[in-house]
Length: 221
Image (cartoon, rainbow, N blue to C red; front, side, top):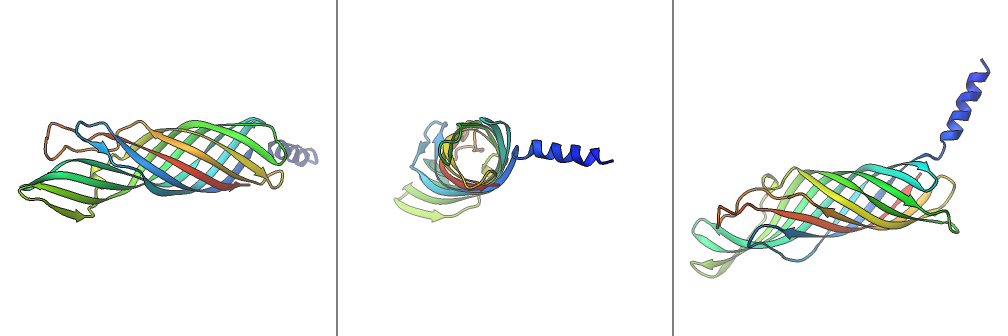
């Protein structure tokens, strides 16, 4: 009877430090790269992410990182647009909120002073939660004037987004099990985020990929 508690304590000791959990916050800059003919990127926008982090360290230098992140993934496009009898150019700023489930390989150095440096590579799967736009419609025909409005465009955004995640960073060891971390991550989308047809030329399907660069800060326990 005494042997079982000793074995359980030994098992818990062996597993101590393999799993870590924490939180992160990440301001980002995002842009959209169009694929459709006649569509152009129109600059970068800012966004913000926050989420829960879970890591499994299967060796001193390698681990798997996952969790969930709520992300504002924004960007801008300009393209030919028609509405009723009006024709011109649409300047659209996208405000897309999604939840991402990443699966990342984390490669770490040995501790150097109080710091551990790491590199990341993995995949992210995102699910669209909401999508709005800030539209600036520059009408050229039948007369020149501008129309602005803020429509809900969730129905024009694909529900799934897949991406490649790469990054670098460092952890500061506060104690044997608690770390502050900070780093830079590039989230490179490779699936089309748009759906629907161009309103000027119905033969053109709307296609684009979204990318963002974020600064991650957080804590692991």
